[in-house]
Structure formats: C-alpha cells, structure tokens
Length: 255
Ligand SMILES: *[C@@H]1O[C@H](CO)[C@@H](O)[C@H](O)[C@H]1NC(C)=O
Ligand SMILES: *[C@@H]1O[C@H](CO)[C@@H](O)[C@H](O)[C@H]1NC(C)=O
Ligand SMILES: *[C@@H]1O[C@H](CO)[C@@H](O)[C@H](O)[C@H]1NC(C)=O
Image 1: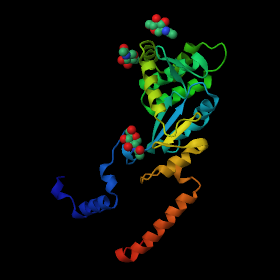
Image 2: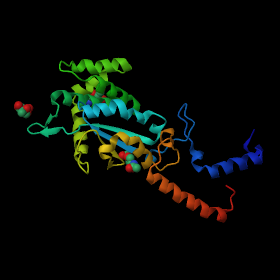
Image 3: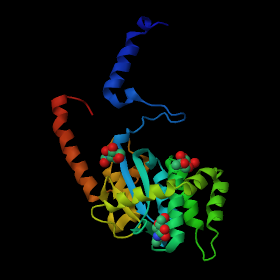
Image 4: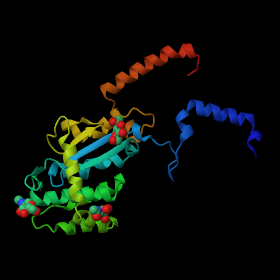
C-alpha cells in the first residue's frame, strides 16, 4: 500500500494522536521497551558520595540503593557513585590517606575501576554491592574479594586488574577527590547524597521520595505512583486542579 492510499481517517487519527501525545512521536525503542524513553536532561541526577569501608555507606548500598532499579525508578534517574568519601591527599607525592586505612584506599580504587570498566549503572552497582557485602574482616585477601565478585557475576577481572595496576584507578580517585572537594555545602558524613546538585542530608534513607519530587517529567514510574503524598505534592495538585477548572469552560472540552 502506498502512502496516498491510506484511508484519511487513519491519517487524521494519527495526527490527533500526535497532537495529544506530542512526546510519543519520538518514541525510542531499545529492544523490549516500548515506552517513550525519558530524555537524558529530564532525568534526576542522583550522586552518592561514599567510601568503600564505611558501615553506614555499605549498609546504604547493600540495603537501600537497589531501589533505584526497582519499579521503573531507573528510567528517571542518572545514578552516579563517587567512591572517595573523606580521604585525603597528603604531600609529598600526593599519597592518598583513608580513614579506614590502606584497605579502604584499595577498595575505593577497585570501585572506581568498576565504574570505569562497566559504565552501565546496574552492572557496576551490582558489582559494588557485592564488594560492600563481602569486603570485611581482619585477614582480608583483598584481591580474592573482588575476583570472587567478578566470578559470581560473570564479569572479566582483567579490566579491574589492569585499571588498578596501570594507575588509571588512582587517577580516577584524584578526579573523585576534586569533585567531592567542590561540594557545597561540604560533605559531612557518608553516604552523602545530592539530587541535581543539592545536598539531601541526614534523611538519605528516603531518597526515593526525593527523587520522585525532583522529577517533573510526564513518565512517572511505578515507584513514584505509590509514594505517600507529601504536603508539597498535594499543594501542587490543588493548584493544578484549580487551573484545570478555570481552563475547562474556555476550551469547552468535556473532561
Ligand atoms: C616520594 O617520591 C620520591 C621519588 O619517587 C621518593 O624518593 C620518596 O621516597 C617518596 N616519598 C614518600 C614519603 O613516599
Ligand atoms: C589501563 O587499563 C585499563 C583497563 O584495561 C584501560 O582501559 C586503560 O586504557 C589502561 N590505561 C593505560 C594508561 O594503560
Ligand atoms: C544532570 O547531569 C547532566 C550531566 O552532568 C547535566 O547535563 C544535566 O543538566 C543535569 N540535570 C539536572 C536536572 O541538573
């Protein structure tokens, strides 16, 4: 069938559809997903500043942060992990000194290498979660810890080994140090979360709520639909309802 033979009713339906759902005219398909993708600049930037061997950081990463990947929340979030915490760079030779000693510095570098090796959020998060759950103990065989995680997750250990050995990991850490240093207000504890650059503070455990509130796009994921409504949201909803009431008679649309 050629284009001009399409029934006109089909064309007008299609045009009407594009008018009502303008964002649907640019649906991107990525394999299984047939929903419109949220544009990169509409996503909420969630940054997690932490260090590898802090128990509050490990607790948060193992038990809470996984919510980013549940109920569609990941479709509206850019998750960034910044494994530096409150380490220090000491002269001479810019030696990195970590609060929990050399083991912590070592694992910070391994985390940085994982983020570089597997930029896909879920992949490096899963690996780092594995590390956080196992990198403990006084007689730690550090290399065995991350090699076991690689093995369990079927990830190649070579990228991590090279990144650590050739200095890329340390170089990445210095970049994370500079980024952490620029935080305003400065980091006070770990994990330290920011949403679109704004500090979340002590209530970081409720980060899903804050992500949902910070998101202003139209593709609201399941995770945000079941949030108990905050005072802020319901005030906004009231305003919207009033606006719609005012618009209705003017547009003469029967909703
Ligand atoms: C700093 O680096 C120099 C040259 O590599 C080395 O001789 C010196 O021992 C290092 N100092 C420390 C404190 O590591
Ligand atoms: C270090 O190793 C990583 C991982 O294999 C690689 O991507 C990077 O290019 C290497 N860098 C240098 C300076 O050799
Ligand atoms: C999120 O981060 C990206 C990349 O750094 C930036 O371009 C974008 O403007 C940020 N979005 C918001 C809402 O701050």
